[in-house]
Each structure stands twice: as C-alpha cells, then as structure tokens.
Image (cartoon, rainbow, N blue to C red; front, side, top):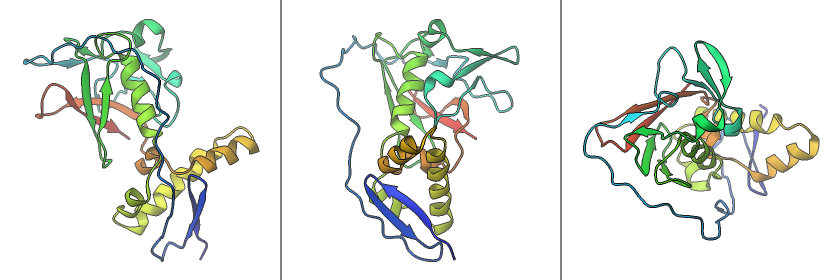
Length: 212
C-alpha cells in the first residue's frame, strides 16, 4: 500500500496508513522582530463588543472571500454579492466596535490565535487577517503531530500539506515549500475557507474562528 510523505523542516517522514508514524523534527519558531512599535493599549470594554461586518460569521454568505492558507492580500469583500478588492481603507478599520487592543480566536485546532494591535491603538481588520495567516504558518511540532488522535486524520493532514506545496509555481518553489515542512494550516485538513468570527460566553475579547 503506498504511503504518504510529510516533511518537518528538513526531515522527511514516511509512513503507511496502517502504521504508527514516527516523525522527527527540529522544533522551530517564526523569526522574531527587532523592537516592533507598541501602540498604547485600550482597556477591554465591560459591555458587548460587535465584530466588524467583514469579519462577522454568516452561515450562508461569506463576508469576505478568503482562503486562510493564502496571503491576506488575496481576500475580497462580498459587497452586494459581488467580490470587491479589500482596499486599504477597509483593512485599516477597527476590527470591533468599540475598538479593543487584543482578542483571542478559538477553533477546532489545539491552539488559540492571539491577535494584538500592531500599528494603531486598536486591532484592525488587517491585524486579524495578517496575524491569523502568520499563526497558521507556524511549523507543526512532533508532539502536535503525534497528538492527532487517529491515522485517518493524519492522512488528511498529509494530503493538505501536499496540496499546499503543489500550488508552487516552479520546481524550486515547490522544493522550498516542502523543506519548510508541515504547518498549522495543514492541521485544518482542507477546511480553509474563512466564514467569519462568532462571539462566545468567555468575554468580549474571545471569538470563535469559523472555517469550512
């Protein structure tokens, strides 16, 4: 039975769907930045917080056309059922009303995505999309991979990894993406369509990331 290949950074893992995988890797993290600008923080409001309409969950009509496995500049706003480029004006708008300086995104993944204000005192639409993308580009670790509860899901993760690498426009780019290894986005197992954020009972700064 043919197996599947998954890379963790520079290392290759081969496993058969009927076998227990033994991935190995060197754990890594995203590059750190040198002293980023830290805007003054707003206090988290005590009352209700509304999410920006472009980021709000809608079960039938997506507020934006966005595949979270791709860069945020590929996102389009759905305005009257017609895709419109997400311009700098919309991207710079506050992500919430009233504005807040931080929020947490929950999902089916075993990690939470922490969003922080970057250039303004409050989180913007761009902060949410950009930091979510960076979060999902974080390399997966051996323990995270081994913690996946069943072989079927591991196969799905491997397939997602393969599809993502195959989008490369050249053989060199394909090889480079392979060497970067498994990412958290691959753990979504293909569910990468952004459907919006919905509120929780955990506070005005904790939201659910809905994907399809």
